[in-house]
Length: 182
Image (cartoon, rainbow, N blue to C red; front, top):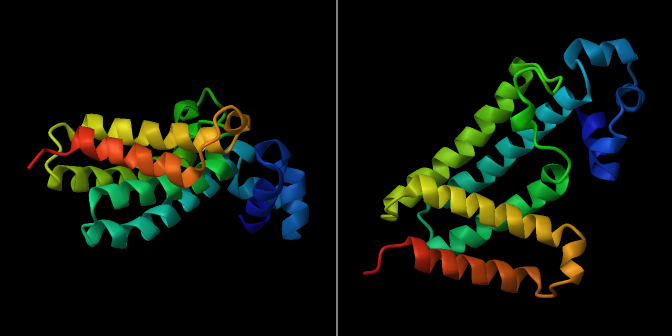
């Protein structure tokens, strides 16, 4: 996992070759295949591990019942880091279940980790009185993904606001749109 993580961080999914993972780990190639049938399964395991780390970091923030705007900024900023590492290469959730060459059992930890993150945010949205937390969660996740994609790719050159301005503006507008007025 460490060797795969290093390769992934250095050069992305295209550079994640099982032979290089074995070499980096100092083990035989066949040993890698005892744990992962292909690079997509290794990628899914690494992605799940990273999502769990994100959830672990967000859990105390969620428990502290933050101001929604502050939480939206924190979530989008954490997600931006995750997206830079994983989100721009492949969408494994859609590939799960056989056709993408990924065994469902290998995708399950990724689905579990994603579900934990979403459930924690969903609970907080409900607590804040958001009338349709499922839809609000979709909007929040889509906004975070869009911003992360924008700021980790070439589109940044087309629209020049910095991350703090963009995410602060998005958080403010999400809070206005989603939270009940007092």
